Amino acid sequence: MPQLPDLPTLPEAGKLPGFEFSTWVGLFAPAGTPPEVIGTIHADPVVLLNTAELTERFSGLAFEIVASTPGELRTVIQTETPKYEEIVKQSGVRVD
Image (cartoon, rainbow, N blue to C red; front, side, top):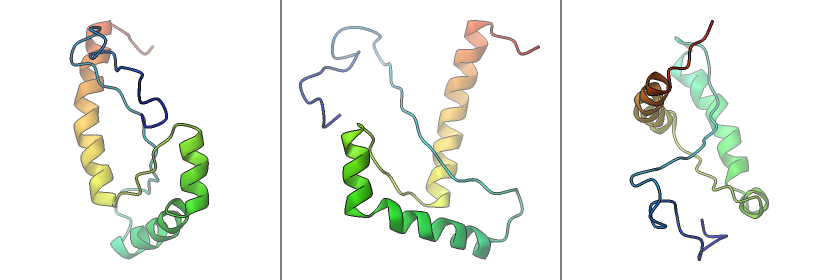
């Protein structure tokens, strides 16, 4: 984190080798939403997220803004889902 340059990560501190955790937020639409509608839904938030005011505000809260494309968000979801599925599986957590 740029806000805490001298704070080591858990692996750097010799704890939990390989540990990596991040959070993300995305906008979603129902399956089958036409690409032109997705483009419209995507465009305005990207403009706002790239303003200096929001970048500065979120940075002050230790958030990094990444205004990705719908395809990039899909890749994040496809990459992250198996990781968390395995964590849940190993934990033995059940939803009743």
